[in-house]
Amino acid sequence: MARKVSVETRRELLEVVGERYRGGTRDEKPRILDEFVAVTGYHRKHAIRLFKAGSAEGGAIRRSRLRLYDEAVREALVVLWEASDRVCGKRLKPLLPLLVALERHGHLMLESTVRVRVLSASAATLDRSLRGTRAAISGQRTRPRAIPAVRRSVPVRTFADWEEPLPGDMEADLVSHGGESAAGSFVHTLTLTDVASGWTECVALVVRDGALVVAALEGVRTSMPFPLRSLDTDNGGEFMNETVTAYCSQHGISFTRSRPYRKNDQAWVEQKNGAVVRRLVGYRRLEGLAAAEALSRLYAASRLFVNFFQPSFKLASKTRLGAKVCKIYHPPETPYAKLLASASVTDEMKERLRAVAVQLDPLRLLEEIRAVQHHLAELAAGLTPHLAPRHDGNLESFLTGLAAAWRQGEVRATHRTEPRPARDWRTRKDPFETVWPRVRAWLEASPDCIGRELFERLRAEQPAVFPDGQLRTLQRRVREWRHAAARSLVFASPPDAA
Image 1 (cartoon, rainbow, N blue to C red):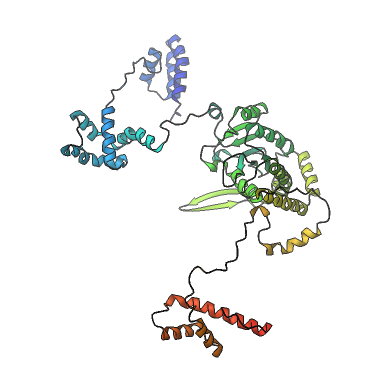
Image 2 (cartoon, rainbow, N blue to C red):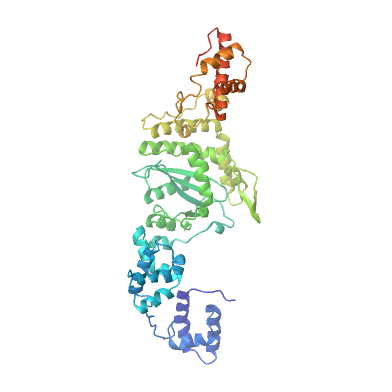
């Protein structure tokens, strides 16, 4: 079956092939007609009529249809829709015969023609007629937003279009550091991820701007171990502008975009947004040149630590068996190891990568990352600290602290939360406040008595005062008293009377 072509393509073919057909000989016309029918899928007789008419519409005069559901019908539908408490068209359709009965009560007066058309309207017609009214109520746009010309010129690439990517085929995204508010100006991170190897580059941007994106791309291209072949971004204005498209066109970079609201089309860079950027920086608000400079220093150390010392998984295959999805992954490797195993990377670049890897100290990189994270946490808290300079001194203190770092909980200062104050107050009245002296006397007389026995004695003395749910409260009070009594034996201090 011939592949269907668009209407515009058919019209262009008709203009070009039609001239050949009308000027062709008796023997040439059948061959031209066969080719045109095979490409467009038209019936042979219809194609002949189009060639003779000389237009895509066959010379026919298009007559506009008479509007069946006019303004009077729409006004009546609005009244009936309001009377039904604004239900949808599918629910409104069976209600129309009942609502038209409002005429008996004098609430509605419809002409016979309008009444017939209202009752004959389908559910889809009802929704279409009421679309403008609903949009006016909700404040939505009644017409779709126009797509900018730049975005129309950039082709779409989905997640399934990455067949066998080479090093240099990258996805890009922008991560905002606005905290809980998107108001004002704040720092952004430009994340670029190589689809083939997972090599990740992060660049701090003071503001969200297309010119800064181009400057960041220019700097990244000189530091990556492979040329930038293609760039796939989302539909944000920082990417969909003439500055970025002109830069990619000038340097031979294939520029594509994802589908709107389809984040899975950029699954590789979205994963790195969380595993690299958010893991390092967190979710607090960062703004100003000081924060951008600190982020640049953080990314200078993290790019080496992540790309040379952080293995990552890559999906090899995915099979669906009913409701179960079976995923098979390649053995985890660092982006550095994947580049060394790639045949697309030159031997000279592999030697340069090996030379860099030999000189790297992961412990020193981690110390630098922790220091800058502490500085960023202070900046996010509103302080103005001084960022300590890099030092190449002894790492014994940092190495010693790693053994006991787990005792402190979260070691990344950018992810630490404010400690909650110790709770030293009660939320409800103590049910044993009046009887506790008696219970304490029972415990002193018989220290081996358990909480349940004491609770039963209390209920025997005061029936219907202590429900079953208060047993656990009494057991906690008894346990606290035992701890205080044990402490008094050790430190020779009387137990707390509480």
